[in-house]
Image 1 (tube, rainbow, N blue to C red):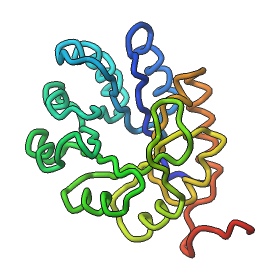
Image 2 (cartoon, rainbow, N blue to C red):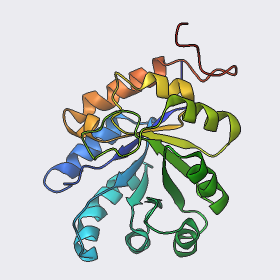
Image 3 (cartoon, rainbow, N blue to C red):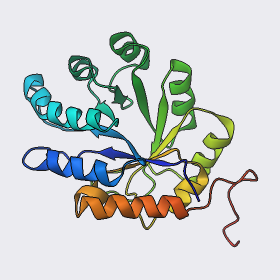
Image 4 (cartoon, one colour):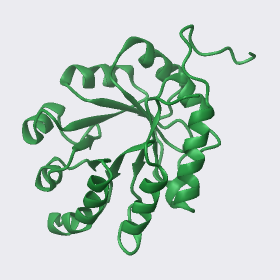
Length: 222
């Protein structure tokens, strides 16, 4: 049974209406496997409005000991006192985020399919690297496609945790777990349907997946 890989939930772009209740249900269903939630909204230039939307979600996460990570926006993360920030390649520097948010903040970096980006993020002091997309995604356009060999290489060479992202579902996630992903970042596969059923299905799939093997990825014909 695999007990090391965990879920990293990413919000839909619309977190209004009943979304706080949906988030609470998802986290309760995924107790012990959902360890982080990323607040990802686009098109809101007013930081006051973004903070208004984020605060109830942050409280829900805090009550359940789930990390609350802000996407892209170091200033908003600092304003909220968030647990961390996730940076794209054009969203600011890890060193800037560390200076603004403090040494205990969790700082992640999108590295697409690039070993170079990932190693640079590690050198800069990131707490995790995110690779993807591994599958076609309905949440955002996928300009980069990553392979299992990238996860496998990172798992064997570096101690820094990796996050797999992009089109991940309960049905296709097992190879990512076996390749060494520490976290599966998921959004549409949870929020586009029944979030409780989806989180439970992920938990079952992760638990059933073979653990990373010391000899490397299994052959495709094995």
